[in-house]
Length: 132
Image 1 (cartoon, rainbow, N blue to C red):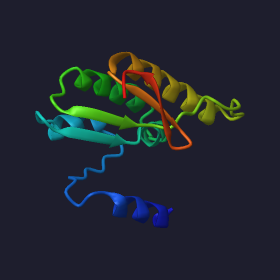
Image 2: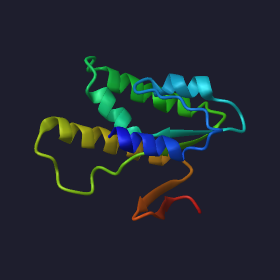
Image 3: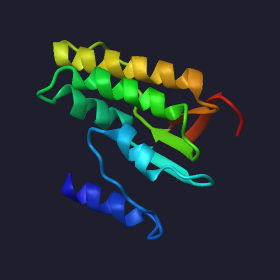
Image 4: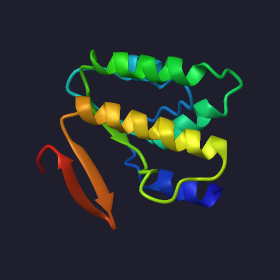
């Protein structure tokens, strides 16, 4: 995993300002927000995993609520990266099912408020909502 992370970081342009925030994304977005800028959140599924595994069971609801609230006020353009989790078999264990449910709800809620929704399959963008 360390090798994969290092390769991912090496691909980033040196001009990017990187904020690594595992839990409190809404606050990080608020702090980084400025007009005529782009914020990339990568990735929402890892964020949901962090929240689900946190000792505070209410944190996931609180942080997703705060995330949706901050979206209404951002001056920057926002790009969110996430993994599709509900196109395969239903997992047997409760935590994995909850992860799929929480991520699926998050995706549905975001899709209604975002200008563009792009599903990438085999490296090809499929425009679900919006235009190329």
